[in-house]
Image (cartoon, rainbow, N blue to C red; front, side, top):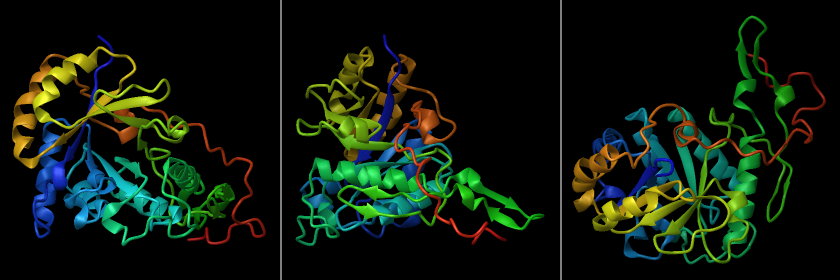
Amino acid sequence: MGATLTIGVEVAGDGLGRLDIGVAGIAGLAGRLEQAGVSYWVIGAERGEGNDVTAEGVDPSLLATIAARHTSRLGLVVAAAAHRDHPYNLARRLVSVDHAAHGRVGWLALDFDHSIALNSTVDTWTGAGLDAAHTDDAIVAVRALWRTWPLDSVVGDLNAGVFSDVSRIRRADVHNAYDIAGPLNVPGSEQGDLPVWRQAGLDRDGAAEAADYLIVEDGDPIPAKGRVVVRLRSAAAIVTALERIAGRSDISGVLLRADPSELDHVLHEVLPAARERGLLSDKRSGTLREQLGVPVPTAPDLSSNPTAFETVPNPGGRL
């Protein structure tokens, strides 16, 4: 048998049932997932699909922020698209949630967000079509922005009166579908970059390079490149699916779309049984990247980009 699988969970409707569930309900759901040893909760995935569930709801980044404050191990993967949100806004919002979670946040990069579409079928900022290539460009831009202000450049030296070593803050200099100078106005993540998930597909040749994980629907062909997680859309099939998938070296994990009514059965019966049989990963400490065992990608490399503050020795870096 190959390496043990990570287990991600998508709860249909995000398990909220109604919009006034409040902090206690969100925290309770996150706590249940964490207690069951789920690797990560994917929040808002259905927003990328045309269905009634996406008609309204709480923003996934808000849910993740609340969940972050009430958990200590659970990974929190926020679904978001560069649709009405510019990559700069996405990069800033996602890394801000990641700071609240101490490095446990990831990004499911959607091509389209039906819940915020407002009849717009193109990128609000550039007019580009919302397809896989557009999302590739958005991921490259967001990752570049995450690297403009390294977290370890924040030194907080009270004696010298220096907040951050600004000589290490560089411009993003993104020039693809977007033109972004940067830098981001929030320091980067303790993970390096947040891990990124994408939906795999026949028209997505660049997806393996742009994302850490490709999501493949159960039964679809497994791409030759990239780390793959298989999405299961039936809790009833999870036991046999885990047995079938666990021995494959080309699959890293599974992502289960569960109805709230199925959740107790999955968390309290199915997952413990699978864990006893050695099918699931038990790593539950550190950042999300550390828990998943996924290194930070080498690209993009900003080392040759100009520094953001070239003319004065330490502007804005003084305490």
